[in-house]
Amino acid sequence: MGIFKSCLGLPGGQGTESSGAAKLPRAAGGHDHSAQPPQQQGKSSRNGAGAAHQIFQISSFLPSDTPLMELDASIQKLNGRPLRVTLAREMLPFKLVYHDGYDLNLGPHVFPSQKYRLIRETLLREGLAAPEDFIAPEPASDDDVRLVHSQEYVRKLRTGTLSPLEELRMEIPFSEATRDAFWLAAGGSILAGRLALADGFAANLGGGFHHAFREHGEGFCMINDVAVAVRRLQKDGAIRTAMIVDTDVHQGNGTAGIFGGDGDVFTFSIHQEHNYPMPKPPSTVDVHLPDRVGDDDYLAILEKHLAQAVHDFHPDIVFYVGGADPYREDQLGGLGLTIAGLKRRDRLVFEHARRRSIPVAITLAGGYARRLEDTVRIHVNTILAAAEAARVEAAAPSA
Ligand SMILES: [Zn+2]
Figure 1: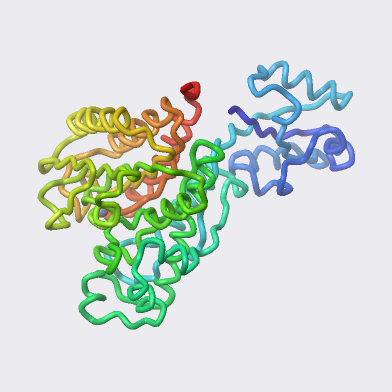
Figure 2: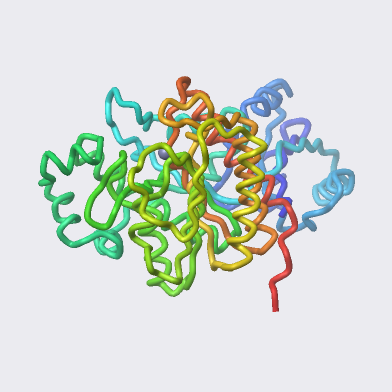
């Protein structure tokens, strides 16, 4: 890991494509100033007229652990004249899957589906991610969705012919735009799974619709994107086994129902016992928590059960369903975690996987904090926790 992005400023207007880039490879995708965090853009503009800048991905010609002083000297040597090097930030060591179409367009609703866009904007504004870190997914195909959901249910969704009762149970109004957003989210989770297998981590800034069953949707969930992703990766031969680690405050009933009896998919759900859904179909492991559990108790219980689960079952991939709703200020949750505690929760899950070299594909799931910015912050922290865990040395592959 340790790919650095630098802002290279050549005095006297020499830092142009023809001078700097002639010897330094441009990163794929063609970076420009928009790739820099805002504070770095400010610094660049203060360098005065004539000081042109380019951003280069320099990992391809220097060892990733090159000290900064050596890095500076190497670039000077490469260019043969004085050169200023400003380290902008360490690149996010995995990709973020996102599409503007993730917004479910629900209008006034307790589910704040504008959060997806706000999470992306926050990551960019705070310099935690750059535009090139994001990849837009294709919608899942109907064939992909039918790997999990019944032909009849998919037909109803495709033709907009759910009964009023079915729509009521889903707790969100049906529209074609909303349906298309779920298809996109499922495509996003498939893509995140593929990227995680390649890079160790990936995050879908959406998805985690764990209340959707084979034959019906409920609890704001139309189709189960994580289940679709698992089945598609299995169909492709990319994985045989998967573990779904679900830390949303609500039990992952749809996921449990879909994979019940399937020895290749381990479903782990840690949730508030006295909350929706009722009843709770059994996951492989269900950890039922009492009301108002706080950070330390929660983390100790999660640690114990997760350690046992990954000891018993070493999956080819973990799909993480990282709900923001165990937060103590959540309107639909009754646990007592803080924002800092939730980040520790995420990090704990990621490090368990990392230590065992298990790829992790992240999805977001629920979050209904009184203040929308808290929900956004909790999800942003999930990405930060993954970035921190990704930099922990992975265990050598077991023989
Ligand atoms: Zn939830």
